[in-house]
Length: 499
Image 1 (cartoon, rainbow, N blue to C red):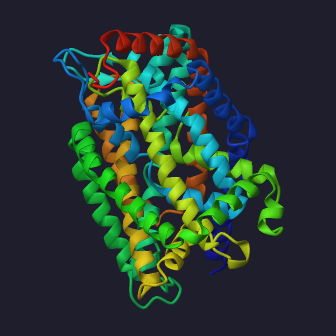
Image 2: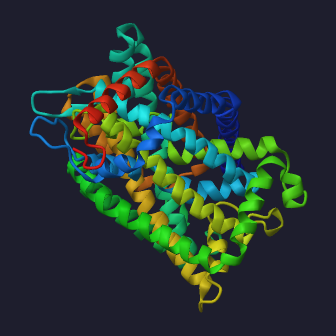
Image 3: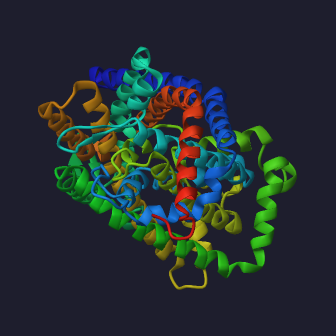
């Protein structure tokens, strides 16, 4: 008995020390230097572009839904398919839970700084999409491989290849060890349990499923199995199937979520101006705007910018991997489409944030955190309906479920492209990784998620460094390519009827 207790204590102590180490490394990786570097890159790229990309939102919308004409256009999927694949890995827990976390810790002002980070992130995403197409490779079979690893190696020169290899390694690990697997499946199963069996306790559970020495709610086991089977069914089909599923699920769920948020916001129309004033005032004077409930401007800025980066993934280098597969020969064209991913993420984050501010569920005295802040905000906004709390939990469960599922799919695609850059077209290794990815999804609901979240954040941050270096150094290339593209458009006189 004493031996067992000592073993448990030693295991717990090891996990605590590992968690502390991961948290320490994470605080350095995602500290002020990286946050400032991402923001600086966005400002630099936007300045180089002279805000030109923002003046062509109408053109970007058109290119998003219209495939480039001409049989000579290379690529594997449509521009819209590439965008939805990228969005599938972006819109998710960051847009729902991340926004709530930022406001809960930094006050309403954090939403303002999220929007600032996302605004400049549009320039970053534009540059990433442009460079991904400009420096991608296409084999004889028409298969495309591109992303930061190629625009680092080909754009900056072979001597920079170690930086490209670093990006690919960190991308592969980030997907497998957290951001694409365990954290997402945990988000789904936690939402399912919160809805179907919130009172479950493993200590006194008379019902449930006994696995890995612990008892889990039946709903968690069933949900985990369903997601795993669905993931395997989609991933076996490769990029085409991922893009097909994402093209249907992402727009449908995004529109549903935005409509629900608008329904709640418009139902509180009289308080919208107050909410906007609170957000802006809290961004520059949190204590005055929140009655002393939240600390300094720095905390609001740090939480808002960091979560803005996390939600949009602008600068991390993940989205250009999907953008490279778009069927186009115009790098700037796909840059505009890629930029729309950040634009749509801004809208969803803004809708979530305003809903939370209107309901005031972010206040520390309520003791809410993460998804519970959003759920309570929806419940308050729908208070006029019978069973408002039930409806809110159901809607958040469905939203998180679909968004997290598509994130699982998107990050597998990113990881496989990173792995292919490292090992070449060795199908055996790629398939083995895909199988391992599905296995990790299957066991994800039963793993401790705190350390995994930390590892995922660390690898995500490490991915960003090589990508940001390349974006800064290749900013002049982005501007020259943009000028050439816009000059070509003017010459064709197709400003109203686009090609």
